[in-house]
Image 1 (cartoon, rainbow, N blue to C red):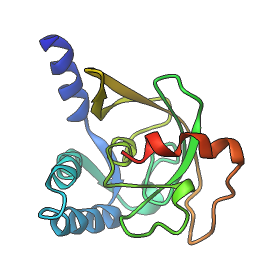
Image 2: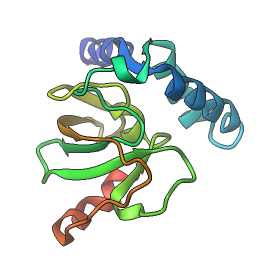
Image 3: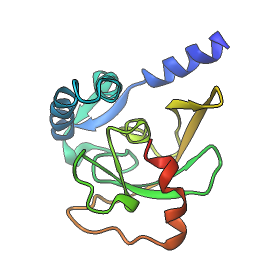
Image 4: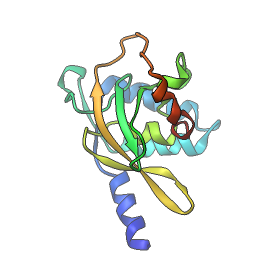
Length: 158
């Protein structure tokens, strides 16, 4: 069990890719939420400390960045599709995931095809998320939501 925990910690500390602009905004969000939600703020800070920064046009298209629409699957469940958004931007809660949630932080800066541990457990077992695809940034647009995509909303908000 200790060996498994070490592996998860090592993966959580792996380098991620972010844009310089996202990094600045996310750092401000982490500080802002430090007293309101210290666990979420610390989880985000850990992620930001391991970021390699790029200009927007240099970031690979297979990296999850802010406002990207991400297709993912948690532990082999039905796939879901959500936009990764800054806290407080919840215009379409059924189609968005805040970067401050365990899922949102896990997705941030990762690449398509990666499988990342989530920062919560069910019945003592770690949960994992697999990134299946990324669609272009929202740029302020709305996300079309299919009825079948609404089924996984409850589990993705934690």
